[in-house]
Image (cartoon, rainbow, N blue to C red; front, side, top):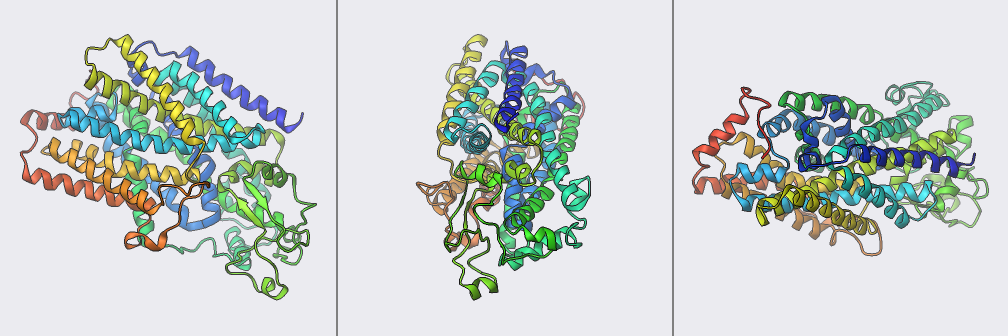
Length: 594
């Protein structure tokens, strides 16, 4: 059976499973659509949360970013994982006890203000729409290679599948679909990593293989990778070469942005009791760790494999043989396959029929001596690395098909969660709570489904012109969540006196300054005609990257809120009593949704 047919069967079977689950778990009420009637088992919810959490950025893009930067991009791992711990310990149980359907619902009621609700809705929409672009980008990348269609067609197919199971099933259908998607994505991610770890180090577990001996050279794997990168003129893999300030701020931005993600928070509204929210968080962290501890090994091993593919004599000698690169005629099939997508490209600058890969900004001595013309791998989209990994390592066809299904599962699971958060904010927080409080349950359910349809259409349109790599776009979304929603939620739970004026001002200041900074220093968010983020590092304020500014926005949010609080009356006594009640164990799990 040829590879395309195998890919089609595996991916088609996974799509059929998702649609079948949606039909089986069709939402019949608003409680089903928004919170799966609060009847989800904690273990099931943990797996669904992990799938919701591990998006295209985690599955497709993160290992690629680590592979081409090294230690500096470990911030993605530290920030996202640390942020989930923050969410699980500080926010999720209390938000579940408050007993609402959405994040704006909590903010609107806690701060006794429709204005606060509206600002929260706007913040949620800006963040979620930015985030969902990364998922659609990831889906397009996966489709363009494995189903041999262009990225635009792939986006339309992905949108159709999400439309069917998200609109039909709501949170109830999405929950069980995400359970299936987690199983698909974790198996798809782990199996290739195990094979590659065995090939390079003889170790079954990639987590151990990363710190083991490279079989061919006899050196520790990371030492060998450092060695070949330095010989090619690149920075060593394990060193820290960037700004420490940006590293700290970026990690903080990802952490508190994670804790403010509405599509993850609403997952904790689906369990029966507050104690179940805590159990869900624990299980989700276990399920997430299964992938996140493998990602650094995938990145390092894939980078080494790419280099030894271009310089094949390295495998035989254990040393980097710069004089004998691979010829264009002899390049492996994985390169041919990905060249057809436009995401990988070579240029024979020297006109000698071979591929040379090195850092032309800091070329090795032999390049200068022999007058080489520069790096001939002119395009390598980092989002392809995980998807191409099985082909690079020459793994069996069924593994390649599995990675295709896993990449699509990761993108679609998070996209569905985000789209549900968007549609719930529109139908429940705007229409039901503000525009038409008398709307019937049937009418609200219809509004939720129509909102979902419009959100999918918008996400598809924006996905056709993505502003960067999937993980970078997601990082921007985390910055927006960090600067707007997280401080309001934290103050809503832990500051009894915080009033509506302070919360609204804080959200506006945090979101406004972050959006302004991003648009100012990223050149209107993307460079027209490309999918690359603008590089204006020389002009950054105090050297702070736009990807790191979410932490600064959060600080400004807190500061503005407390300044306004000092100038106005604190929250009314009944609100202070309400805040106190959600922090007291007595009565846990008894709060009912309105």
